[in-house]
Length: 214
Image 1 (cartoon, rainbow, N blue to C red):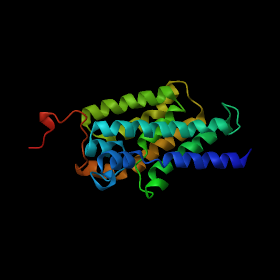
Image 2: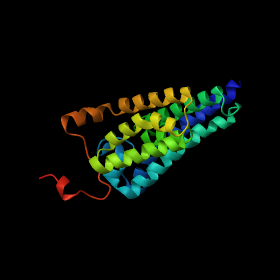
Image 3: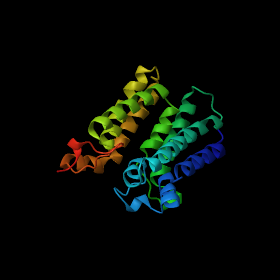
Image 4: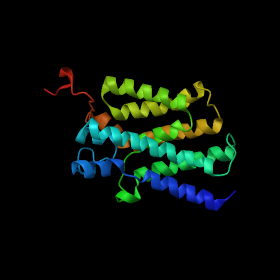
């Protein structure tokens, strides 16, 4: 095992995660630091609420790509594919890139929750599983307008979806179960607001009359 290479890959994953797409796009194109508006979160959902879909889409795509790219760096680790060592390296790179997104060195260590980055990582583990989780997310958000609920439920079902699609390595299942718990942890403030009925709703195409406050 070449520890120098492994270390460089981990540092590279953190730096990829630290690309603060929400902050940079907000500042460069709109003159707004999204961390000072809305929920204060440097992620797709807050960008959507504060700056709109035109700004949120590139943020979402970039965050997904950096997650996928970071995990894909495992191919440079020198381990044969489909070995436990290769999987462990992919898992480590996933955790580090999400850590970079949450605590980005390029944005004062104040980032987002890492959901889109996690989605990108999961594409490198189980394409079928993450597509089903995204479909679940879309249905729940479309019905409730709560992105936090869609994220948590999609994450909770991800291990089952991945197993359904044939990605049933027990190590991967344990990791995905951990990812589910991580999503609940990062959304703990949202859970509190949901319980108190104060969670913000997100509307892609404007509010319906029934959802408009009276």
